[in-house]
Image 1 (spheres, rainbow, N blue to C red):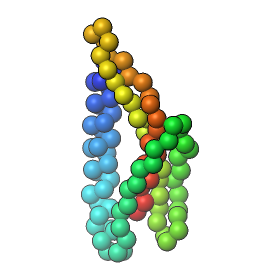
Image 2 (cartoon, one colour):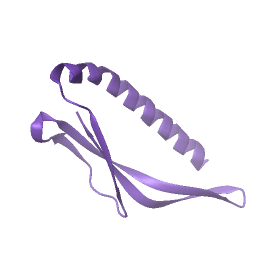
Image 3 (cartoon, helix red, strand yellow):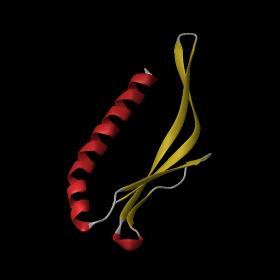
Image 4 (cartoon, rainbow, N blue to C red):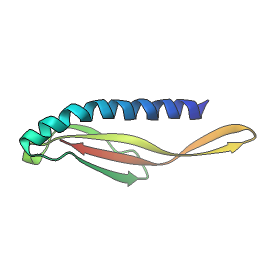
Length: 90
């Protein structure tokens, strides 16, 4: 059950990201700015942020759990081993 929810969330996140990135590429090409993505790993969750950054970029920081899953007695058991803070700037 947990794996199907994880797959659904991953699929919809990827689909939403694809929809958001496609139109922005045209705008970014006109402005000469690059779309940048960086990921940082932490043991504990960090706060996210959305807003203007230096150089006229708009940045968003998203917390993503780093889960490790295994099958125990026919059941999937997932544990959060850390957190990923994804920085996206446009």
